[in-house]
Image (cartoon, rainbow, N blue to C red):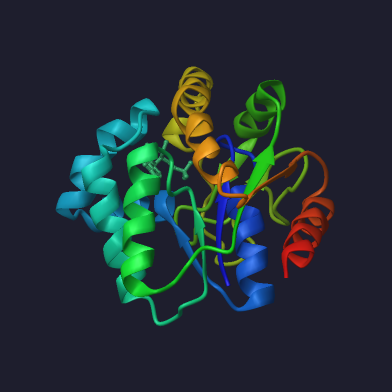
Length: 215
Ligand code: AMP
């Protein structure tokens, strides 16, 4: 099974993708995590991506496409969920070309819909573990020990791109660019949009129902 999960920043793509990957044995390929790992490791890709990410801009298509293509080709699994990629029309077309070459067609594109107001509230309270990337919310999904990750006890951080002005900018980028790309999948009958608001487990159930409805 090959899925894409799309939605505005902070819609819960990472959380839902992680749940799905675990329950259905999929490789979770997250473009933002891939870039952050490269930043931490000080690679050329990380150095190139950092300033775009800190401003809340998209990393240029050619750079992003190359990085994700390599990650997909290297994957041990033919079953995966792509989280955060594609975000632009050229990325969607490049992904199609690659999957066609590999003989791995897409099964479903899941879009998590969440209002801008809710996103601003969610991202402002979000804390991220810089070691394992797990996210928490200081109101809705608190870590057990105040500001430390439940998995590895690392101190949690507010990501640079989760600062209020940057959140607004990321939302503009989403509406101007990524939302437009969705027609590409809707036209081929691959797109399912669902309500991304509510408890993590309730959204996970909606996602599950959307997948079952397709199988
Ligand atoms: P995310 O963790 O998915 O919210 O991504 C964080 C940041 O990484 C984005 O704001 C972009 O700067 C960059 N990024 C992630 N995925 C992509 C992509 N598919 N295309 C361009 N930039 C991306």
